[in-house]
Length: 155
Image (cartoon, rainbow, N blue to C red):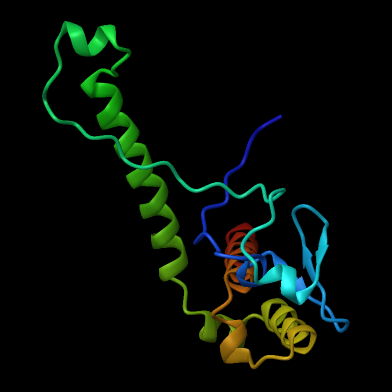
């Protein structure tokens, strides 16, 4: 089965996570683990069962590569450069896709996205402006935008 990666800002605690939703009883629900947390639990860092992992750090390419370095398990400079390029590409692609969409205009023009945002606002008791800043809403907006563009291309 193919694997997927979702790149987002790492939340400090469950209540700040874009895939967690709160319900009317004051519980937070994690859409990934399907666990429920009280408000107190949700503000005490991330749960140990949280599958989110931080992106690894870039590798230092220092130019000191000799036989002792490789004997200790050191990586080739090309490996490190490739590693760093991969991280740059992941972050660049995410930033470009998320920043090039005018979510307010999309809300006004796309009926499906508008319906989604309006339901989201009711569920979370927030304004449209606040909702359009949420990562989950932006991901949905990107999906609705891609669907609309695909339909236009087919016609």
